[in-house]
Image (tube, rainbow, N blue to C red):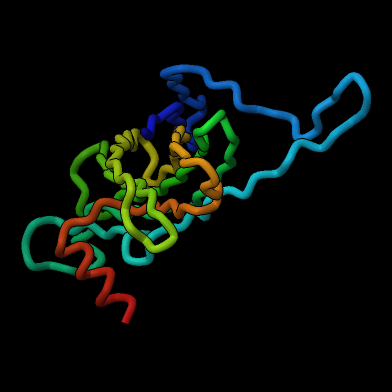
Length: 187
């Protein structure tokens, strides 16, 4: 299961935060016991990667124009990271997805909606879970916005299963023409 915990817009004068629920997962690595200090066993977290073809988006206005003046918006995955914890037979992963968006010359609206996906796979890249998310960007008087979502991922573990036996992928939701544009640009 995946759940969005917090949404923040880092470029506004005030940071907007929406908490669906508060999860206190700040756990000290050193556990103090009555007898001595013991270091809690470190667990290996799954790798987190941005999917190569889905790391950026250029959206053009309708029509055949594809130069800089035809750009409605540009978006990109600015960074991903996180931390993980064991909770009984579940692996909890807090993942931070940082997105950037820039309004293009052809944009005629003060806001834009961007979709992105988070997928969990096993080490053979078999998809175990895939969930879409949406972020709404109000430009107001700014042309570029950075935005961060914090997601709470819960991965059930079978007995003996390694905590790093998974991969987590993040990417923007692109149309087929937008994906083709990225692949052409990369060549």
